[in-house]
Image (cartoon, rainbow, N blue to C red):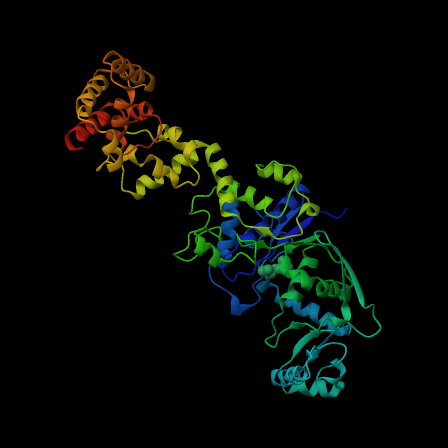
Length: 501
Ligand code: GLU
């Protein structure tokens, strides 16, 4: 069997949409499963749509998610260059080959002439299609004499190169197979003579894409469903060159949370969830900035449109690689469910190496200008990690360890702060001051023992103690909080609460 070589072929026209990320992921999983190569090819022939920074964004996204290409513009490889803008000569040589074999031709029709024909057709309720039915009566190197063509070229008349997609007498029915959709049949005689080379001498997507997939020995084309209508044209191009087409797999769209229509940036803005992997412009945070872990996003996206069967949901990337198959890609679109995506992240964050969470926490400390702290961030993480869904939650859960309360939750105070509370907290303060160590267990025993001895209801101690240390009734076990805060912090906070509440 031919070795597996797949490619992700984005056009650098803006930030990578989450659908594009999933396409890259499926290519990656398929390549790794078959010990093949995952190629990143940048399709940048359309200079009008080129956006600076977009290619860099794509590379950074793939790096963040661990979807690492084996060959790419940055990395190089045996089939380079990997930017289409550096391969122009190749496309033009291939266009010439088709022209020489009468599979393509030069078309001199002006935009005005074509527009007039379009209008004419419309007036009688038809659609103008430039193809085998009329190409012989239009202004091109098939209808004109060699001399006329030579004259036009001499006069620098602008022209495009068109593909003679179908010709009289050929098989009308083009039967193809898509690994996701199954058998697909198309009437080839309905296809128009697509432009292969534009007036400015640049190749179109169709020509460059097919030539590159062949020259780069791509075995499987795994791409978004929006390209399904181009499959027939591409297969005809392969035939025209005398090449055998790769295997195609068209991946269904990612749908809006409502299930209707394609997921767009506007959906994200409207409902407050990211649709881009990384921050793009200055305003919109991506999944990374919103606190998603790359492995969680990979897991979620893998299952959004593909299913290994069964109920299981959590898979490591290695497991995804082992299980992945094109046949199990769903035919219908995958509904993007922000809550489910968050759920995946929650599972990953809570299981993550605590160093990752600590790193995020330290980032917040820097951001808040807290340079020195006596509180051990590692111990804080151990206490709050199982309360997190997104990485920034670490700050919401742990802020009070680093910032003493400056005010106290009114509702909690009203309910829990009694006349005798200051006296009780003063006793607690003494217990903490004289405690032999600051282990949570020691403190728990001391404080609970004192309450029992003095017939003070435990709630009368614990709730005010928590309010004094945290400022509200939240956070992990209160003795664990005392322990991590340390003696000095506890005493300071008790004093402040006794004095101010
Ligand atoms: N450059 C095309 C895109 O951005 C590639 C489509 C394909 O994979 O063939 O969608």
